[in-house]
Picture 1 (cartoon, rainbow, N blue to C red):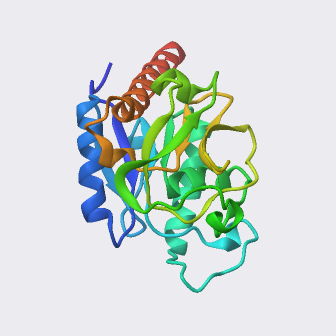
Picture 2 (cartoon, rainbow, N blue to C red):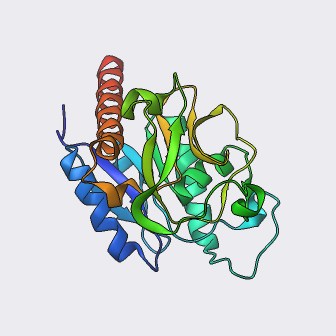
Length: 236
């Protein structure tokens, strides 16, 4: 039935991917998967993988959601186009998607949502954090995929973002918020598996609830691959 280890395409920033991808690859390896690094300078073939992670770094070009360009933005239009295409292709092909920070925002934008470009100005009761350590508390929504994966107890996470999800894209729901009401996780309410978290679980590989996110993605990728193999065999 083909390869045993699920392959996961991982999109990264051309600037910072060299240091972020190894952490994501480690988390995937711990979960029984294998990561393939993609960026806007590397060919990305969704047919070669069983699932997709859209990683962090860089701001999403506001032209994708009718926002305004801000002076501090770090933009990569080629990456925007690549990731938007991959998200839509993955969902169409029934392959699971995990969005991390920017990746959660891209999942939302690809499905027609928009972003708060200065989220902490909108949510003044959300305490600003900028740390890879788990010093921010988020509340997981009951009955969500995130709750199934990581439980419903208040979750301690890190934070390296100033933008956040605003209006939800098609078929998306809120999976977690912080104490000020800012959206911290979103998920798709219809198959396939599609989950976006505003924090960086790759830095929290020592935490069981964060490793569970990668394990869930790898399990969903393996299941999707098996289903597609069965369907292909039935057509022969």
